[in-house]
Image 1 (tube, one colour):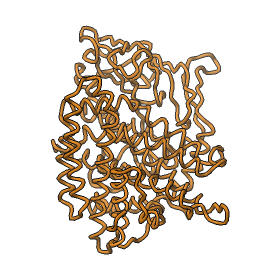
Image 2 (cartoon, helix red, strand yellow; image 1 turned 60 degrees about the vertical axis):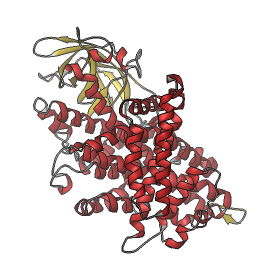
Image 3 (cartoon, one colour; image 1 turned 180 degrees about the vertical axis):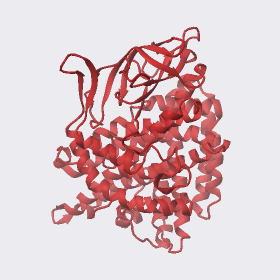
Length: 559
């Protein structure tokens, strides 16, 4: 039986390094179970849900406005697996999920979600928003919203709730300060009036949104965060009108729509003067989820490409053995592996930041937009290459490639398009000297490795820090023009450092293996010289693509 966890040469070794022994033992049976489901039932249900998108029923037969969204049974089964069987939205917030004595680490959650998303991308959106909504309420208003937190983190089908974030408005888009939705204080509660242009999971039970608080000021300073329930306290439907559902290119299994708040019942969350900053917490966690989803799409695309290249014989030779195809597959394999390493690294630092580690908080602040920028953009290329590798069949909806490609493009758009994210990175450089934070942290980690490439990476970090200083010394317009390329350089150097750390770990394992060292060396070589021809790696492509042993001496050779 196929199993996506078993077919991933990087996942288990990475988890061996980043998880405690107890957490690693707890996750193993879940990897096996979810890996099999992802390769089987989840994949089948995802194809059905994609082909049968949600439908809006605005009115009941008697003319009453109901605004209900009808889902195909495949969607419901996918939700059951995610929310109830595996508790993917609950595990970061409550103890006891899968027997974990405390809240489950983010690294575990993202590793399991990564397997799920390889077959079902769309469901990860409401999952992420439910998870993030619980996080925001827990951080900023836990006593008032104890019941809502319990519902958002429930795995019981009778009590669980889903969350959503309504932020984008037609006239504002990325410029959240132009939000026009107005909040009115009614004494015991507030009411909200306005229109939200992109609302994923518009039928959510619990919505967090921003609205302008009269007298609080202009721009983002004037925005407060509010909770809008699907039902009022008396059980009647809230004044949240779903105007229409979006006809989307991808992520078709879940609903996104345009929503009008017509005097909707709402209650404030936390400090109303800090609404935008509170929403930013939800946004940032969602951005890391975006990167995880894109890493998952890349891994699935690579798996499909390798399987096809193994089976397809052209002019008497399997495609996998042909030189140009091997050169095409190699960077795709490396990108998928490096992206997973970055997602798990950011998740580990988020665990530390949540525990009060200030240095980890500084790293997470910049790692999150870096991962969102680079991983999501690269997924578009990797899924496109995978479609081309499969040829004409790759363009046909009977195969998974069109869905992977369509979904990959969304990763670079939602929660901030690439240019927006690059400017967020630039703000981190300007306000917090984040390039020096990265250079110190990862330069020291590279230098500490007992591998010659570690010293080269440490030098590269010094050079990148100096480049960042020169960038910030230039005119503001030029800083913005260069922000994207510099963000990618930072991200790829973090990735190179992480791959080399993994290599050092695997080289000193009880059964030493040079596979990760070969991957790290090739990644660094191509980072330094994109025109390099890594002959050693191309000769050992099977081990890099599917797992296997590579002698350390071979991996240490020039690539």
